[in-house]
Image (cartoon, rainbow, N blue to C red):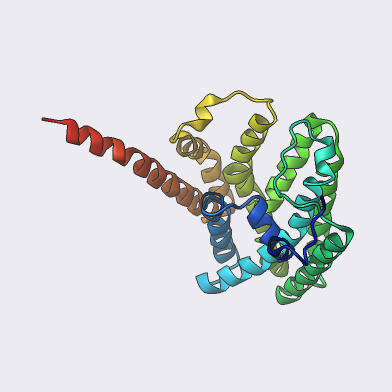
Length: 273
């Protein structure tokens, strides 16, 4: 039965910006921390290095950009969890809530208000390029949620993944009119963020069998494997940002592997005579 957001506290959380994403996708602590380490921290790094901002200002700028992005993306999440499930060969219900018309209306209005406020705060409210990026994100969301052919959803998923990493970073670069920096962000997103998630998506849809992906060291090896192209990107553009992001990703994976294997080492040491 449909539930009313006025009578269920969870629905108030779902209405709040990022609330829907948090409850349906960014579960605490694992999913939240993984996203922070693989997308948000690299995003701040890119804003700081490509936007020539100190860490504090870069963090605030990224958060404003992320607010604009997630408010649009959450509309896509809601559509995916309602309309999209009708055309999904492997449907998965993520939120135990059947939205009413009033909920959907309030959901969209709140998010549009936040997008406009963030655009003003980022000085891109009058930028055609910024709104073109938002329109492209919306188009990809509509296509992803209405396409019936799974083989075509792979293309829309890849685009959405690129937007998810890149769009929060773009406003400062749009203000600077730095097209090269924007392309650097997209290339970095593809190599360090979107490609690993694309393989996960293929696996989830039953179109890929890659059992090695579940090994703890897999992502560490994958990041090292893309080192040549990331290094070339930094050399060609004379920008250290892609390499810094790669080094961050490698560091995170090293810590993850070491923490996972440390208990085994301790057990083996305890067994020694």
